[in-house]
Image (cartoon, rainbow, N blue to C red):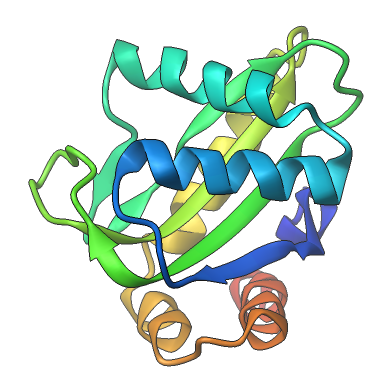
Length: 154
C-alpha cells in the first residue's frame, strides 16, 4: 500500500480559515464529499465520535483523525495543510498545522491499521513535514506526499 493508493490529488487542500478542531472536521467532511462522494455530515460525525475516544493529534504539529464509515468501498485519505495552526488537544499540547484524515470501510480490519501506520510513518519524518510546511499549493503538496513513497522505498 502506498499513499497514492489512498489519497487522490483532489483530496489535498490548504485551509486558511480553520479556527477550531470542529471547523477543521467540517472542512474535511466537505473535502471528503467532493473527492470521494461521502456524506459530509456523516463524515464529520464519525470523526467527532472517534475523537471523543481520545485525541488523534500525534505531536509535532500533526493530527491523524480517522473513522470507519458505512457504504465505503476502500480506504480514503484527505490531506489538509493549515495556514494557521490550531489547538487540537495533541499529546504534546502543540497546535497542529498538518492533518491527514483516513476513512475506512466498517469491515476494513487490518487494512485500516496498515493505512494508519503508513501515514503515521510518513508524517513522522521531520524533513518531509518541513518540506510540506514550506509549500502552500495543493498540487505541490500532493507531489511531495507521492514522492515520499519512492524515497522511503529506496
